[in-house]
Amino acid sequence: MSSPSAPAPRVVLSTFPTPLEPAPRLAAAVGLRPDDLWIKRDDLTGLGGGGNKLRKLEFTAGAAHQAGADTLVTTGAPQSNHARLTAAAAARLGMKAVLVFPGSPGTSSSGNLVLDALLGARVVWAGDVDPQGLARAAAAVAEELRTAGSRPALIPFGGSSAVGALGYVTCGQELLSQLPELRHAVVALGSGGTMAGLVAALGSSAVLGVDVGARPEPGSLVCEFAAPSTEERLTPNRLRVRGDQVGAGYGTLTDPVRSALALAAGTEGLVLDPVYTGRAMAGLIAAVHDGDIRPGDKTVFLHTGGLPGLFGHSAAVAWATGRLDSTVRPR
Ligand SMILES: *Cc1c(COP(=O)(O)O)cnc(C)c1O
Picture 1 (cartoon, rainbow, N blue to C red):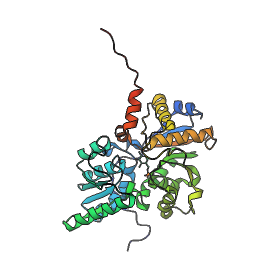
Picture 2: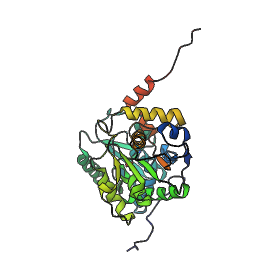
Picture 3: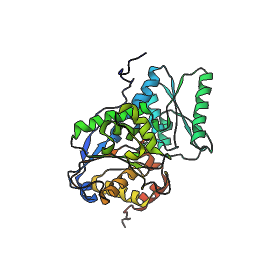
Picture 4: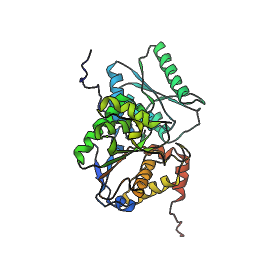
């Protein structure tokens, strides 16, 4: 038996620490002081196009690798950044990846799926299933692989578990060394592992999660995944979670998100995605408006990646393309 303090198995999939960059023009545009707002560039984690899921995979894929697995099996939406980065991690570790998605071929064909294909992943379409059905499909795929003589490991939805959250405990520690006076860390809340790790490292009062609508009760997931890494007694109502950016659901493009995408790009050249980081920025703007974040508060925005998802989101592509300022020069 290993001692409780034995370090969790980890593989290195990226270069840390990621940069922490000032965003003075965006800060002023949202009503903060120019030196209040910082961007944690976890979109620059590198491998496979980068993003927050790599920090979790260092631990979840690390455990699978150490246990002798040869194939990573995971689930997500067809535009899942997590699935794409699982494929990249598998390639880097000399393993195979099988991605189990709801829907059928043709449900989605651009954005992340282009990279999944390039990274050599196999995709299994599970048809019209709910989240439980998707999890069952992934378990069945793993069982088939095992019967065929492979050694599959299931990576949970979004890479989120207590083990995956360890990746964001280390990110929180990085942030404390980069900006000791940090007051708020603002992050998109999807499957919960990212916020969980940050809450464990920074305390629940320093982390503002912006629910993207990926999961019905993300706050309880955050508490579950953070629990082994913190002494704090967490309950969902102790967490700071904004639910006002979900709109009509996970895949929809809302007005506050359109404004946030345009503002971040126009003030700092910072490209956000319509599902996660766009909602997180819209939540940050709303938090400044209602006084939850005040001028003078050192605020870190977690840029968790997701750029390929922009190209896989037809409504966002149509909206952005429609803004193009173009003329034809007569000759
Ligand atoms: C998955 C994801 C998130 C949310 O992280 P969770 O750990 O699932 O809550 C945020 N941003 C991007 C770009 C993501 O892909």
